Image (tube, rainbow, N blue to C red):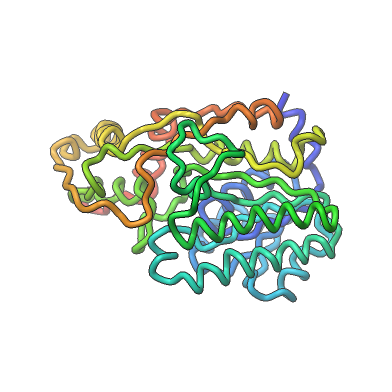
Length: 336
């Protein structure tokens, strides 16, 4: 059913902002496989050109090196496009706490530039990366789209503002939008390096180097870890849905299950030990909780199932199996 639905993307002109990043590059590759005409806009602040190696020379792929903070660049990138998948952002709660101004410039001003350019270009649909951080201090589990709390970080504020702007652009200008609140996405191409690396790739690289990962807190904080292929599926469903009721909505992009950090490190050690038995002996350390972190995150995916036809294929263990194999094949230390 979904394969037939995605065939309508053949020949469609699609812009992926942040297309050299983790999620964006996976979307670009999948869209090229589906024979869409893909343009990537990226300034390589956090993305990498090597993420595009598999498609960089493809006749249906175009790369624009530019910044969404520049409106002229946004207009150039959006011209003639059917759909936009907006992935460009400065992620990370700690990054936003350390530098709230730049996070706001990229995530709010840059987002607004993209909405204006999309409106002016007359695109059919604008699908954007929202965030589970929008749920803020709400303690209710599972997280349901229309019940949020107060934001706990500058990053969370920027992503909530995105949702408000998208709603206004539909009501004021008729631009159809869909927001996908990503829940701890992981998988191939996720960067393990840098101060703001996500927990899974960071822990994988540390374990492959026989270094002890440091869990923030006692390890009981839990997350709805969501494998990249589930998120790719949601984006494709969002740009192909013909259900009018599915448009101009916010959806949880998740798997609907949660894993705490102790369970996560056990899974990583178990699967990595298949390649290197010494990893099973690496000890786990603990540090202080991070400012702005919420204790638990678990999404309801009922709305996405009902309105978009979402059907996640990868639970945490299947996703970890795939991700660990990718990291081992592509990033394992030379000494191993």
